[in-house]
Amino acid sequence: MGQYEDQVEVVEAEVISDGSESSQKDYWREKIKEELREELREDYRHQLRKGAMSTLGKSYNLGMMIAVVVSFSIHHSILWAIIHGLLGWFYVIYKILFGY
Image 1: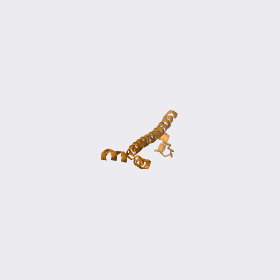
Image 2 (image 1 turned 180 degrees about the vertical axis):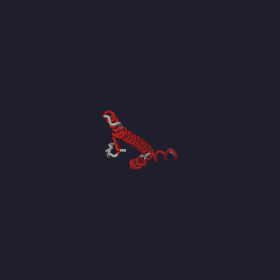
Image 3 (image 1 turned 120 degrees about the vertical axis):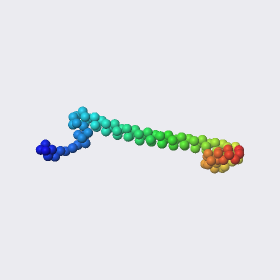
Image 4 (image 1 turned 90 degrees about the horizontal axis):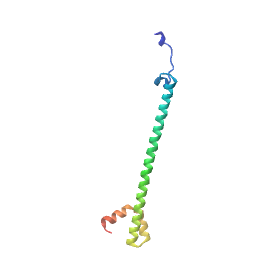
């Protein structure tokens, strides 16, 4: 038991590696890879949300334009066209269901 009585300072890299310089480099290389993967995942999620919001915005604009054109062609009033444009797809669907 004499050889185990000394206090030993343990460093995380030493626990995972055998203590050689190349195995320590491998450990830190893997840590950096993990961090980069996490950053890429986060960036991908951000881009996905950004793309979804862009698509929703474009479809809302399309609904607004259709509503304005339909409203103005029926009522010949800019005020009604603005109001129906703000309602967007709701007005378009209403007109489809209850008559043009």
